[in-house]
Image (cartoon, rainbow, N blue to C red; front, top):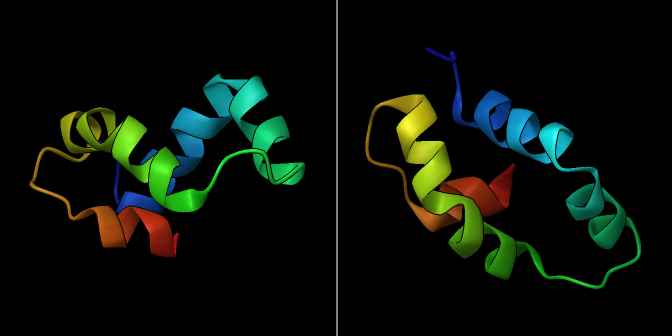
Length: 57
């Protein structure tokens, strides 16, 4: 189990380098990314998570 929502998001982004590159180039928005990885974050965090919490990371 991962300790925080931010560490879950960082782990997901580090596992998929193309997402990191898209964020650097402003190709994708944070809210769209949050919607995309929401279920993965909840699975890693083992608790319900709001999209706004993911965006704030």
